[in-house]
Length: 285
Image 1 (tube, one colour):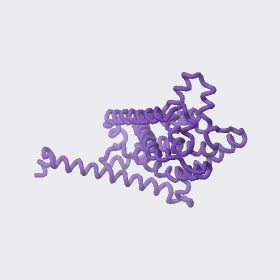
Image 2 (cartoon, helix red, strand yellow):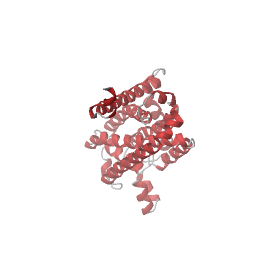
Image 3 (cartoon, rainbow, N blue to C red):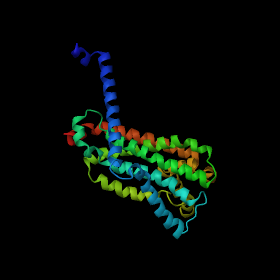
Image 4 (cartoon, rainbow, N blue to C red):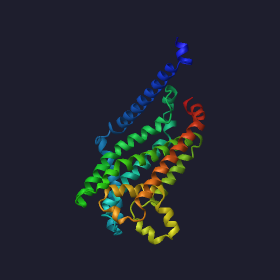
């Protein structure tokens, strides 16, 4: 009986698949809860550190560029412009940095679990997305106070966050798989993140880039996925930003962000299938 169910019975296969799905969801849940507890149970301020760190970084950049260098942003108040990007950037940067070594760091657990090992980097994305939510609420409150209300575009925020999280998750799975083969990937990613931070309009205006770059280079810059994600976040957070932003246009940014997320996930799935056996052999055992 048990042999028949395990080998050929469709109902047995269905039960087995459901059990695997339940086991994977349970492991993912446990990984998320464990990560949150480990991060914030010991520190005195606990979960407050989730947005104290990016707030400190915001304060430093605001003093340097807003007060000392007197940078002005036409599209929005500089502090609001800055915070709308920094919480977004920290979600991507912290997730990718932590997920890169997640398979190797959890190799002992990989030996015991038969669940898909991509759950380990995915759990980090879920934790960091959850941790980013108070920061986003703070930006919404700041925007409502400074601009005396919110735009209806704030309703786009869940969609933008979902696309952003999907892009981050796909990049994280790819980085974690590559790290198993090449340890230098970690340092390459760290260097690339520094470059991307300054190559993305976090604390300077897109209009400034328009003035400095030739037309063809500006088009490449303004419609890269990272700039598009920041643009969509700012449209959602900042009332009136959509009026000031004629280029990049909102609809092309949405299309580019969604297509990029889909392509990254297709690459992550392909890389997972190709490297699954290698990862199991070199990490789990």
